Image (tube, rainbow, N blue to C red; front, top):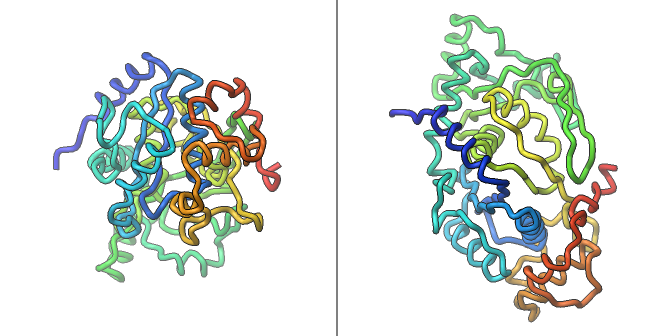
Length: 333
């Protein structure tokens, strides 16, 4: 397989950034959209439209076993029903396509190959059980940190490890530097994370041959010229890893806006798995698009209960600092 020339594509992305800002919404087609998904989509759309930015819809369908047939088409229809639009996406195309991650595999392979050539990654033969049982495995804020078991293996040792499980492909991990990444989130404020102590060498391609989210999202945002990323604050902990990858590929990191997740009446985060406030359920309750927009805006404290309005009307009434002033979720304060 002939791999694309990343330098040519990075130059094209720089030309796109010179034309102006760009935002995106990047859902996974693993189930129906619920109110929390819709609120994040609305916030991403509002931020982009306030900034006069290109707004891109990208479908993150890399994890094929979890993709539900028909989900992509339905989420596109649901977003349009809500009154959101986008300038580039799977159906209309655009200068930075394709817009389905499943059609961008050669790009991720080219990126991994570049890292392999520069010895920034290494094959890892450890299973999850191996890592969990490793006596030297430290614990960080988000769980067990990979202890670097396979980082310094010799070629002979790697061959021996592969021979033990010939049917299993190795994962590929990034060699993480011992340093702290600092960034200023537009909603959550100043953030920092020490990659070595809090993250460890993380996976870029999994043992099931699926490219990891961290690699795909960085390459996509870089190549699409994305300047602003609005997403749920459950992804705040991933940001330092992604900034490190932007730096390795010598691409500018976007500005990050990590907005609070929408929660149900019990305080639990909404989930596709349990059908929390699925859009179809809201429709069945007699809510039309203006009622749903009002419900989402009310959950942010922006309008009075029961108010009905369209997405463009909300955009017109929105203060310039409204999204930044949402602040972090209480548990992150």
